[in-house]
Length: 466
Image 1 (tube, rainbow, N blue to C red):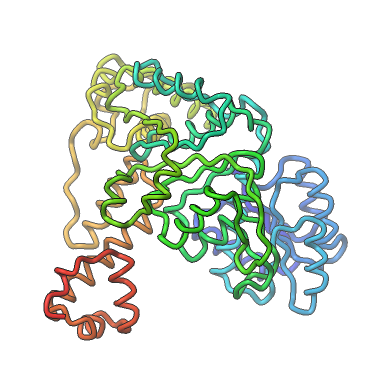
Image 2 (cartoon, helix red, strand yellow):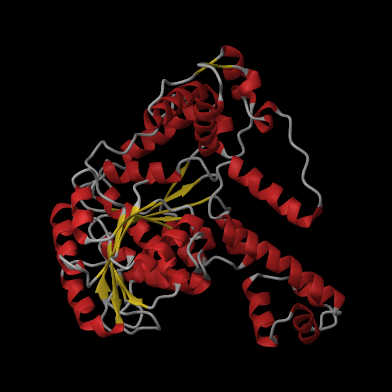
């Protein structure tokens, strides 16, 4: 990924942002003036630009104007003192993504930069030329069924529900449906509803009006507006909070929605493709997913097979991933021995294609020779599972490592829910089901524990004696 550029004549501001981005593993480059940044722009563009508004020489406003002329999709964050607020507001007319008032909270700054990074990736994907996104690979009969389904849907704008395990390439299927469909010339916008904090998800989907809530300094277009005329891909739809399920149902039913804090209805001309690894019928029976929304989404269902059901594709996929990793790293591609290919064909790959892709990248970096043998494979692929570290923290670290090896993403929300559910269930059991006492044991308020019990779906049997 391209780096984030920090442009500020104040060395201390650059230092603070450099340290914060470094801790988050976000690549960055720093410049003391707009002139330095403009000079570097001839060699390559950043992923996100963060610039002060007042600097010797060209101002941040001028830098914004020149960057946007050449690279309109790059999000630009303008840093400003409160006294410069009028100037910052005028910057939005020049295409600024957001402004960051000084003095700023470092965590808020990093969060804003992360949002800008996601925005930049979406904009880049939306402006990708046709054919730039790799096609799905597969010769197995199960994949040929998927290809035929995509072909049959090529002239349709019908809602599609993709069901598949994590790591199988649900977004690739959604992109293929978009690229070969009648809306191909319009934007493709994707959002993982499980990875987005619930308090931000409504604003991300539907946008918000200026002043709708604390921190809403400007009107913001949501994903539905960004995807206007094109396709909106809602990944992990089974994790969508109940209140947002209701809002999504309304959009699908009558094609209208409101921004957060808005009173003017907006029309949505968007094709929705949803995906989930969960059993939505079971979620409906449990009452955690609306049945009417399920039927709205389940117009056409497309099942994507896990990698273990298409072992004949492993050799094809490994060649593709090894070649891509070698190209990215500027080295010669590795080759797998017949023994390794036979072993991989028998491996269950719980993380599916994403796990295989991660393995190929690991081998490109770590395997000592050009021909990869069995001894070069990581222990978990050879079947030599490493022992879990002692203690519950060690067990948690082992679980995270296991999921990362399988190509998992969006773990924070899922693991946090499991952690909170375990704490509350055990505290309730210890307190004989008395919520107030359990809340006191956990150091939370009675309203908080009541809300958590409802949100986490803790069974009433855990509250005996309440």
